[in-house]
Length: 254
Image: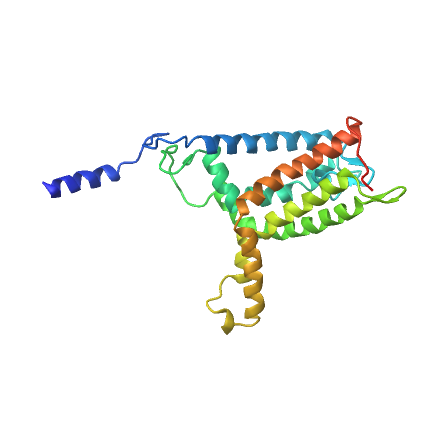
């Protein structure tokens, strides 16, 4: 009898749950729902903002969607499309974002212990193959952090001299959040401290261990950095756009 019961239980455990089928009693769908809403909202707004090709600059402020500002006579579209592919590629291939949109948008699966869409895995093809480029997008992201850092410094320089505006603080926080997100990247963590079994047995082991702990500090809250940087880069564009349109006035603190 115990043996038959064991075999029956084993058979049930091997049966795959149907789509959205689960025995969970909690509100498991809340997380994927808000994740999907946040991602879709950002994608829609950033795409709209990129197509506008106006109101992306005011005084010393430049929208991060257009930085660095590249303008060529031969380019017929918005200059935003010349640069947005790099940060977009970095986020699209990010390990955290992959988990987020695989669950929230592709429903494969939507949550732990919840049945996902039926699928037939055929190896790393198409989008999965593109994910392997994450490390190279990381290098570009580090360059963009420097560029946006320069923009933040410039945001304190007005026509009448140095000063501090609300926009200066907004742009400075933007580069802080983006840098925190980038420094917490799993690929960067592996790059500085991976492939080492013994730090004390390798060249520059002490320095690499310190670098690994530094990156791990940001990596510990990689999800939080991912969301706050995503929100703030969009908010920065909104702020610059509204000031440029005259909807709001940039207040000078100093």
